[in-house]
Length: 301
Image (cartoon, rainbow, N blue to C red):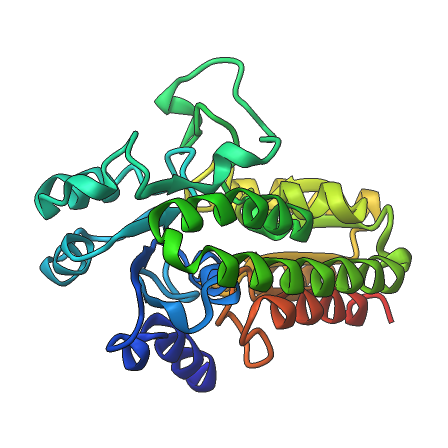
């Protein structure tokens, strides 16, 4: 855990040392988007990432330090789909930075460029933390990373036209490497197809769709609601009847509920990195998915 925190801390401040010569100041809401901008922007961008892999991106405070970073940003890159609804609107308002307000070229929501899953048919706070635009955890499917990269490139060239050729060359190199890695990951992950899993929070529908995993139940009775003892007992009975192999959670999730269930059901509980910095090996986007695949495979050996 100590090393993971150090990695996340390092990534949070990624680019600060490059700031003197960088053309663009970029404010990234989550580590995966900071890492993606770094892939495309190289030494032409200075990136500040607002959250770490050990923080729940739903629940961040709009601290003065974040507001100050947003105030000097040329481009803001966030997930969207109301993942940051609890803090980003406050931050944008307090920043007074017109360039990164919604509708401006400096405002970029990744969720606008992928096919959203789990769009609710009705909105009711009694159903927990549901998102009108669909589940916002799009980064768990690496195919979405390429879609976002394709959309981010023209935004970078629009804001920093003088370096357009540089960004285009880096995007091409990244896309070529990413497509090759995707083929490798999907080949490695074939044994996972159809694997019954339990999730702690409904944070993995895109990964399940990508790998063909079968979600049997969630430990949270409703999104964002802590597990109760009666709900855990109900899930335990599902584990025993449906031959669940593994319980997965994000690195930032409290592990007590999944560990409790894993001990009683005699199955694995896995903490997946979920984003860049979520494990010792998830030091960049490539490491994120490589480590995720290997951790899942370890549960079925």
